[in-house]
Image: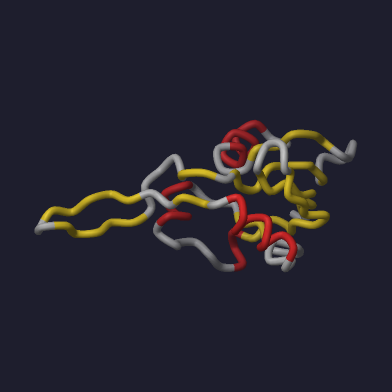
Length: 118
């Protein structure tokens, strides 16, 4: 994986293991239970704007995995800013798909295999 691509990609998805010599298949962490690192919403309270983070519950992530919400989901290559602003969501940012999705009870996170199809 090229250095710039790897650095940008790993700022959003944590790669835990390479699964191929070709560099196109990785085991990774998609999302962890708990509060998001970056605020991704703004609300107004008493006339003041407040940044709000999301809190992903273990139960919700486990249920999403059980209902195969992440299975086959596309992986998009974009910055955190683009992700939070829902920008660059088209085919030009598509790099692959997630499969073999599981919920790790010990670490309270969703793990998957990412196959890159560039």
